[in-house]
Length: 113
Length: 112
Image 1 (cartoon, chains in turn purple, brown):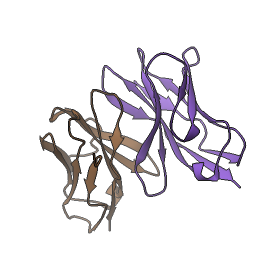
Image 2 (cartoon, one colour; image 1 turned 180 degrees about the vertical axis):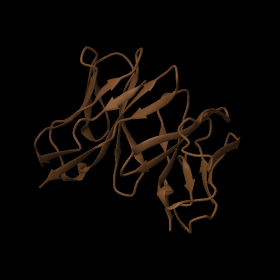
Image 3 (cartoon, helix red, strand yellow; image 1 turned 90 degrees about the vertical axis):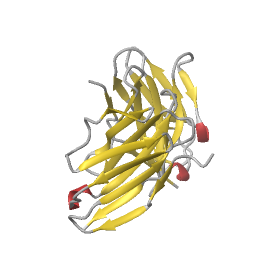
């Protein structure tokens, strides 16, 4: 069965510092991988996706993610965190054969001033 | 494009009542998904449609839940009868060929 793991419930980082939110996946074949962000009382917003090609994917708001096939990981990164980045982040994987996006449990990012 | 539109944004109902949630997907998208989000269980896929046909409803929790998609521009999720444990945020999302989902703003359901 497909699954996505986000091992950290919460990540704390000071503004201006780099941040990493971890994600590993278990999906057969070559999955599509996504990161979404959710602000309070809002829906999920697309940040970035990996389908094929360069392992480093750049997305919205200065975020990027690194695909590592051998480690089955897709960690979200940002060189310099902002307080406004504080939100709930979801990693997701899509097995294109099933067209079903499977989400991780989410990681709350808290950026302190 | 107005994106995926869900209504109502908030719904408060009494236990035992019927609740209908509505979703208008993005025009041209051929997949539609219903998700439920709770603190305890996170994001759960309830059901999804391809070209208006239900493909996988294995996530629908009970027979009290039903979903329809009568045409390409409209879908409903119905709970009858509703129970307090159904309280959650329900999201609709649509996509074209699996290229990425666009989510609606969600319906916050409270059953008292």
